[in-house]
Length: 108
Length: 110
Image 1 (tube, one colour):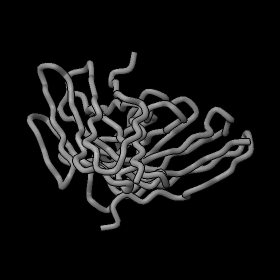
Image 2: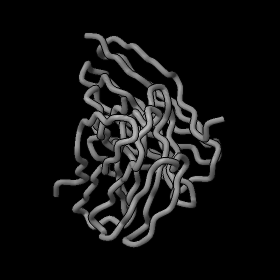
Image 3: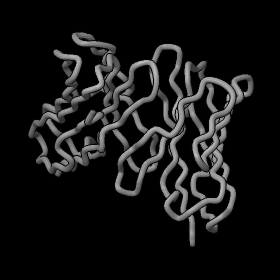
Image 4: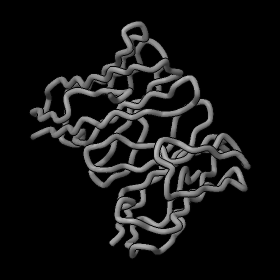
């Protein structure tokens, strides 16, 4: 069993739709990260969360520590949001565990 | 700041050859990591380092070695390349906040 489970694995949306990607984890964590992997392969960090909610532009990330669950929301989705979104948790021993990613395609 | 720089971007190796994947960061981060990413799998930790002179094994260390003689550099060495090491390799670094990733090295062993 993976320490980090993401859903859905694949997601296709029409431009403008509201998108939610979910992440559940089973280990005690120091922080949770949402990463974006571009079609070219590069990985960038979108958010680092240890509690509550963060917003950056059209992206919102929330975390519920008690339920060991996080969501990444994209409002007014755009084709340039097409990428793989990866949930990663850093445990209390500073090791990272990664979900397998959610492949998002936004169609114009 | 250049962030995390990985070289090379692409490499093809023959079975049994050796090579070193280079990783350098200019942010004075203590924590550095090497991951491999295989299709349909999450990133798997190969080795990590919490500071110069200190390294430790991750989840999938077999077939790899690392060194950390300086804060900036964290090279990953493959001594006897095997087809199972065909993968995309990512180096990352962090301090207390965000994690920064290199652009990745796509390695094929034939």
